[in-house]
Image (cartoon, rainbow, N blue to C red; front, side):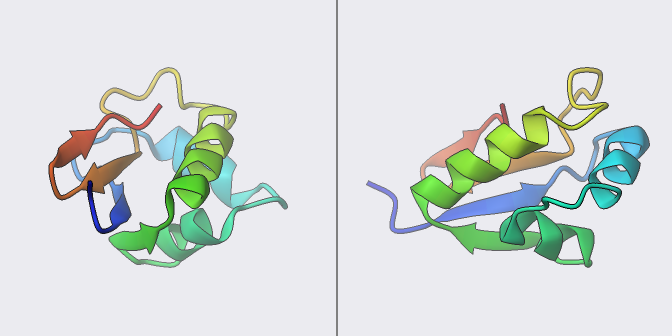
Length: 82
């Protein structure tokens, strides 16, 4: 079992509309807020990760983004965000 999870910015994601929409929301989860403020990765609990990815999936532009703008990493490998 992984000792930590990390929510990361998708470096190859073409998702400017998602980032713009995310910045305009008033209900930004703390891990996503850290990414919006310039962090490349944020260590999170599994509950925080699930909440952040569920929130991210509800933001305009998520479905069209491929790859996704944020994704979850654990030491055993990457988990697609959403």
